[in-house]
Length: 525
Image 1 (cartoon, rainbow, N blue to C red):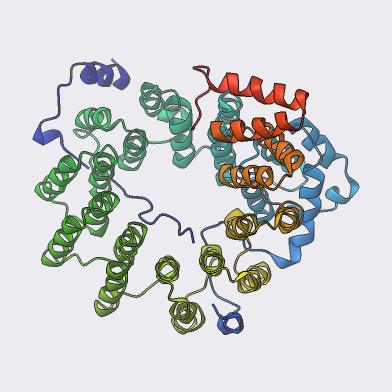
Image 2: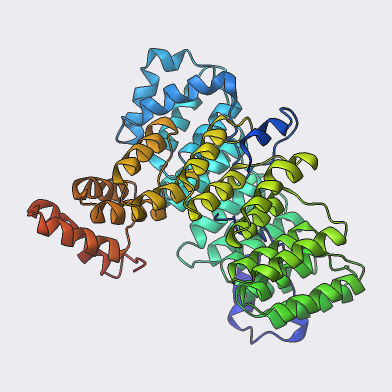
C-alpha cells in the first residue's frame, strides 16, 4: 500500500493526541511589519554594502530603471494576459531591452497583486532570446497565481515546471499550500509528497519538514502529527521538525502542546534554540500575557539560550501595540544591556514606539545617529515609520521631506504604506486635491498597486469629500483587480451614488452587494 493510503487510514482512526504525539516547528517571521529622521542624516549612510530591505527586488538598479518603466507603461494599457504578452512582443522599444534576472524579479514583485500582468510579462520574457527564467521566478509566479485563486492556471504552470525539470522543494511547498489546502483538501499535500520521486526529488528530512510545515500553517497540526508518527521510523527528524510543530500548536492556540514539544525535543536529544522559545513568546505576546513572557525570558537565560534581537523586537513591538509604551522602551534598554546588537527591524520598531510616545527627537536620533553609527541601513519600513510619525504629529512638510528622501534612496523605494499616512492626514484635513495628486504619484510615477486598505481609505475619503465619481472609479478598479471591497464601503458609496442620481452605477453596486451575501463570496464586513 502506498504511503498515502497508510497515512489516511492512520489519521481517520487517530484519537486525541497523547503526550508522546506532541511534537513541534519553524517560526518564520516573529515581527509584524511596523505600521508606522533628520534629512541630512541620509548622507551618513554608506553607499555600498548589502542594504537590508523587506522588499526583495525593489531596490533600484539605477542603470535599468528606464527599462522597467518602459515595460510597466506598456503593461498598464493592456486588459488581459494575452494582451499584455502581445503588447510586449510587438513593441520595438521593449524588444531592445536586455532581460536580466534582476529585471524579471522586480517585474514579478511589481505585479504580485495583478496575476494577468504577471503571467503576461513572464510569458514574454520566456520568448526573449538568450534568457531562461530561474526556478525561483517560476516559484514566484506559482505563488502569485495561488494567492489570486487562479488554481487551474497554477496547476498548468506546475505541469510545465515539472516537464522542464525546474521543480524545487520550495515550488512543491507552494503547490502543496495553494492547490491542496486552499479548499481544505490537506490530503492533496500528502499525495504530492507521496509522489516526490516523479519530480526527481527525495523523500528526506527536508522534504518531510516542508510537508509538515505546510500542514501546520493551514491549522492541520493533528494531521501533521499523525503523518510524522508514520514517517519518523524511516525519515529522521531534526530540530527544525520540532520547531515546526511548536509553531503549529501556537497557531491553533494550543500552547500547552507547544510547551510539551520543547520537553519532547529535549528527550529526543535536540536542544531547544532561540526559535523554539521565541515562537511561544510570540504567542503569549499576542495575548498580552506578558508575565508569561518574562518567565520564558528567565528560562531561556537559565538554559543558556539567551534571547536574540528578533525575540526582543517581538516583545517590544507587542508592548507598543498594546499601549504599554514604557514597558516597550524598557525592553529596548534590556536588549542594550544584554549586549545584543540591533538590526533594521529592531530600529524600525523602536522608531515606531518612540513616535507613539511622542518622543520625536529621540526617534530622529535613532534614525540620524544610532543607525549610521551601527552601520544599519534603513529600509522602506524605516522611512514609513518616520513618515507615519510626522503625519501623526500633523507635521506634513517633514513627512513629505522623508518621502522625498525615500524616493531618492539607494537602498529602497516607496511602497503603498509610504503614502498611506499622508493620504489619511489629507482626508482628515479636507485636502482632497492633495490626495488626488498623491494618488497620481503612487500609480503613475511609482507604478504601485493599491491594496484593500488603501482602496478603502480612498473611497471613503473621496465620498466624504464629495468626489463621488472618483470614488466610484476606484471601486470599479478594485473589482477589476479581484480585490473585494468591504460591505461598509459598498454601502457608503451606494448612498452617495444614489443621492447624485447615478442610477446605472447604483445598480452595479447593488448587484455586487447581493453577490457578497451569497455563500460563494465571503467578505469582511
